[in-house]
Length: 103
Image (cartoon, rainbow, N blue to C red; front, side, top):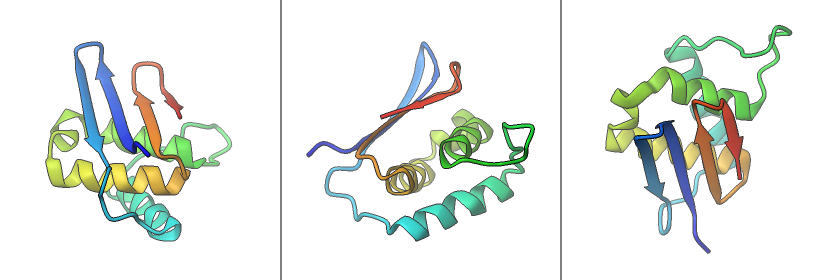
């Protein structure tokens, strides 16, 4: 079964990580990794209520990471593994211009 994470930064810039054969992360470890990066990158909740959904966390972490971290192979691999495991989806597209996550 195919497994990948694609992050679109702009129409001309995308980052793709093929997770086929990658060691899967446990759901809780994936959530913890995203939580740690959310805090480390000083992300802000997208919702006025302050509630942070997993998809929101993925979006804001990817946005805060920007092309510099997304272009770092080791960081992007960790992000992709955490995203796929936390959302429990084998194929994830993070579209930053649209601020959307699709499966």
